[in-house]
Length: 208
Image 1 (cartoon, rainbow, N blue to C red):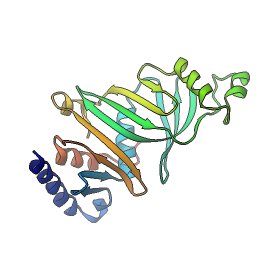
Image 2 (cartoon, helix red, strand yellow; image 1 turned 30 degrees about the vertical axis):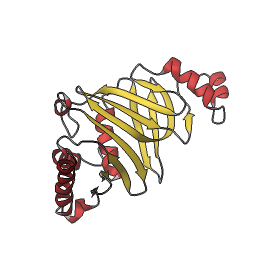
Image 3 (cartoon, rainbow, N blue to C red; image 1 turned 90 degrees about the vertical axis):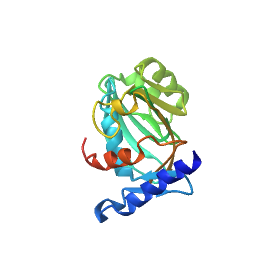
């Protein structure tokens, strides 16, 4: 099994080396480390494709920083700013579960639905305990935040790199590490690795 797995990664490495110059920086394969890297632009494009199907959530902006992504979200009319990065992804039964570590800021920004009294209590510096308590009351069932990790669940989109049909009968669990040049992904097995990477490069960068 290990030899087959290594051969799969070696095939992916050869494929990545053959990419045109315009795409060569978008994906990298580390055979020895058993991992692949997607550029931050590709991670954003894939995330937007998946998250647009989450009820009551709108991804308003995305900035890639050295160690985290600086995200601005709208959840049920509340505006949040979160510094987060994926740490684990599970694709199974046509659904996804995404665990986002939140080591940086988690702030409630000015929102039409927030009263001046509530905003006074929950502005930056109020502490994560207050925000965690608010999250438990306001977040929809497919979003959960325990003060350290934001968990997002939902159904995969019908089409695209992470289409639901690709993971109806198979599953893919990935761990990730944020690096300045992109997001490194590792897994015990990679069903349809080349197809997945090819589809990831087909996703249009910059689409919102």
